[in-house]
Image (tube, rainbow, N blue to C red):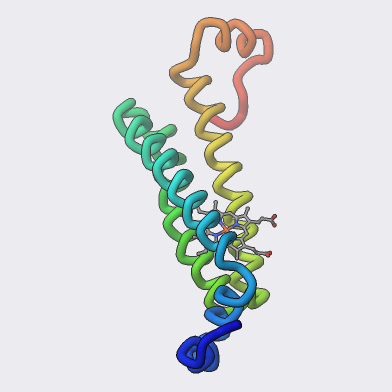
Length: 130
Ligand code: HEM
C-alpha cells in the first residue's frame, strides 16, 4: 500500500512506485552488492596502479570506470521501472565487469606471476594478448 505522497511521486517517476510496492528489500541488497563490488574493484585498481605496469593498470582502471557507470545504470534501471535499454545495458555491464576483472587477473598472473604459473605458461608459448 503506497501513501498519497508516494503516489504523486510515482506519477512523476515510474520507478518510485515499483520500488515502494514491490522491491524495498532487493533495493537494499543491490546497493549493498554494488558497494562490495565498488570497494573490491577500487582495491584492484589501486593495487594494479602501484605495480607500475600499464598493461595491468589500464585494464583495472577500465573495470573501475565501468563499475561507476554500472551503478548509474542500475539506478536508471530502477528509476525507469526497468526500461529495456538501461536494463539491457546494466546486465551487459555486469558481464563486462566480470570479464575485465578476469582479464586483469590473467594478465597480472602472466606479467607478475608466480613461478608455478610461469612453468605452466612456458610450454604454451607466448599468448597473443599481452
Ligand atoms: C557494481 C554495481 C552493480 C553490478 C556489478 C550489477 C550487476 C547486475 C547484474 C549482473 C544483473 C543481472 C542479474 C540477473 O539477471 O540475474 C543486475 C540486475 C539488476 N540490477 Fe544491478 N548491478 C550493480 C548495481 C546496481 C545498482 C546500484 C542498482 C540499483 C540502484 C541495480 C539494480 C539492478 C536491477 C533493478 C536489476 C534487475 C534487472 C532485471 O530484472 O533484469 N544494480 N545487476
